[in-house]
Length: 83
Image (cartoon, rainbow, N blue to C red; front, side, top):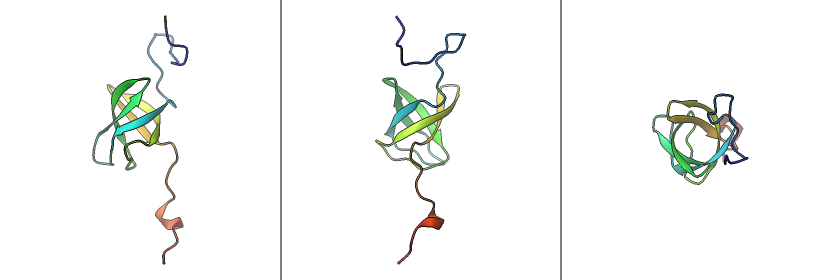
């Protein structure tokens, strides 16, 4: 029996786009990390630095690696007030 909260395409493959996971190994723009998605650990990459425990949204799958971005993007440096 298939889990009802896992979207599948017509070929029976899991649809990862837009799914929400949790970072289990922090990642940076030049360092691969790891996320937990549906109770499974996946390699992950991002264009943003992301800390362990943060929620991420899956953008796409590249083989066995998921491309992710932070669910709540940080404020840009330009918008920060300096003292």
